[in-house]
Length: 68
Image (cartoon, rainbow, N blue to C red; front, side):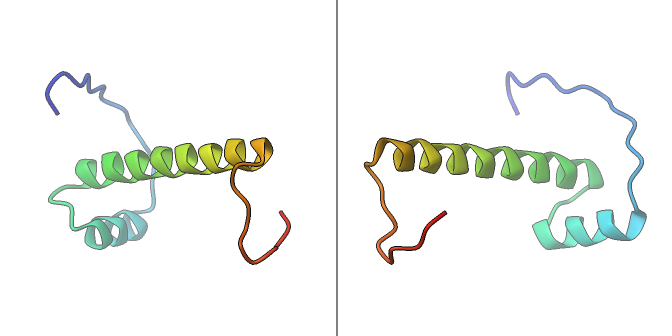
């Protein structure tokens, strides 16, 4: 994480869910699991936004003809 600024935050989360997330992502710590989940969520939102822009421009269409 070179060059990345990390801030300490106090979060209230369900312990079982955090452990499940850590196991699912194969993280070595709870903090790493939370950071990875945040990164994946933000990346997913960027992908959705990009597809929406392509759809609105008409440069990408659903090959199966489904509507949004």
